Image: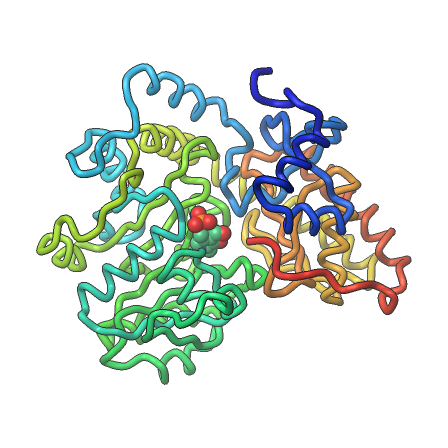
Length: 428
Ligand SMILES: Cc1ncc(COP(=O)(O)O)c(C=O)c1O
């Protein structure tokens, strides 16, 4: 290997602490996790030093939807490297045109235009810029415990905990509880540029709204002339067993934001896709948003290969079948372990609830020892997020279920009162 394991693991950890981020190293040490990803293949990740192997049910929130280094995406990018580079973002681009068309075909309703960015947060910023630019209104309403990333507008739309250190945020941002259409109705007025919501809020603990929520959100936005932005950075691209999570509620947003799994985990790429009427703003201001690496040609190639794979016949059926296999296993675990509070699940987007906030972090540690990487939800630490690669196979689902079983046995024996608190939040 040219890049993996070329120096002792301890040296990597020391240098990481010295030159990259000592604080994080301290937190991982405190948790007893000194994992440094080395080899990666399909659903598996290996520790670079010990060779300890974990099945990745974190998938970086969906980045590794197709597993690590999906062969078709890797092959497409390898071939593209013989002809392409990132491209010049100011000029027209063949690969961006091809990907734009593909996304117009796949996104809901009459969504037509795509702006590409290197990451999810930037794509959210684009969505909010578009909404404010189009409506010329100041207010942006998001939901409490939403997570949209760490850039300017995305941070302002997110939860206070990540904003606290950075002084005044841009004005005009306010929050209402998720799933409460009445509260939203009260907050939205003729000053509202946008309502922005993660279709299934992930960092909040994989929350599922009441059935009439999204139809009412759509009506509220329509009545006020506000732009409805749905963040499917985690929930989109097949994660829920549908191409888009919002299909369940038969609602078309004005702007759909996607990222994470879009380029198969081999090249950074995200997209802000919007309906035709909004494009008036970009047509009047064609150079108002720029990004040197947004829509890099190599990233477009990766995204196209990824989309080819998830649109193949049987792909979404497989996601639903694996989700069902998990659901049956969870039902069994819930009957056997009183510390399991319940499960919220759509396809392979799973919030596994425990009865106490301290149990989520402990569960992450116990699972890690049992060969599974899965992280608790930052804003609801009693919930373990289980987001396996969508290509997971039945025997691998059973592996995760049996690791959960063993971890629950261990946690059930613990005396909760004597457990320390962990420094949260640490993940996203
Ligand atoms: C729902 C959601 N939106 C936006 C983002 C930001 O994406 P990125 O980390 O690529 O900036 C994330 C990242 O975790 C996310 O989960």
